[in-house]
Length: 255
Image (tube, rainbow, N blue to C red; front, side, top):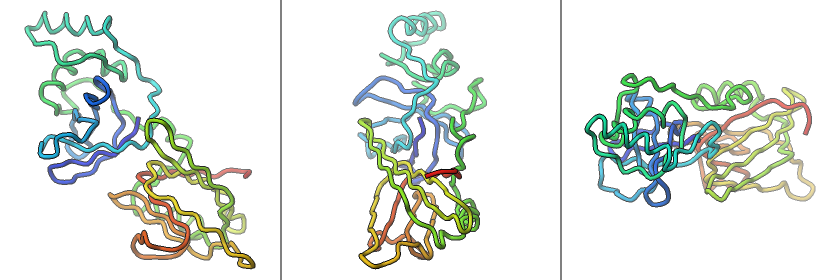
């Protein structure tokens, strides 16, 4: 799982893999990594305590739990035994799902449930990267956006030839767009994840549908793309635009 976390204390934003989920529904909590503080954080999935300074708002980008293992009642008996051996109260954990080195580290789980924030170097927990990082190029900074725009000739003479929008039952939303810029670069597939706005406006009758210029703006707030040049995101723009929490791209051979 890949999420965008926003701190209620100072609005600090940090994207993170989810290392484990604790309990379910209204009581769901996520264990995430705060790259700025170099700490693991236990956060409520539901934004239910708005005046709690410990609280962090979570926005899901990818919901894939590949590599997770479920720790139900049988495996949680080992956690209970660990607590008994060390004179600790059993934490409020009914079900635990996550990476084995996280969920199987009983000292770490007890510490997380109690303190809610634990230095990353205190336990032997491997920091995770995005599982598809070898297949896609992620655009996470303004410099990376500028690099792609230079590579793709600013979308000049490109065509938006295909758009696929997907929304899952768990609320994740993504739009995959294929742009044909064969005259300058080739064909690129852009995947916008955590979509917050998607507007496609086809060219009118007898008008060319070539894109002359475009915008790709990346900030802490997310990603904004439009089929015209602009200095700042403009959600009132009348043409095609996409805003999302994350963007990745790759070159493809065929449409």
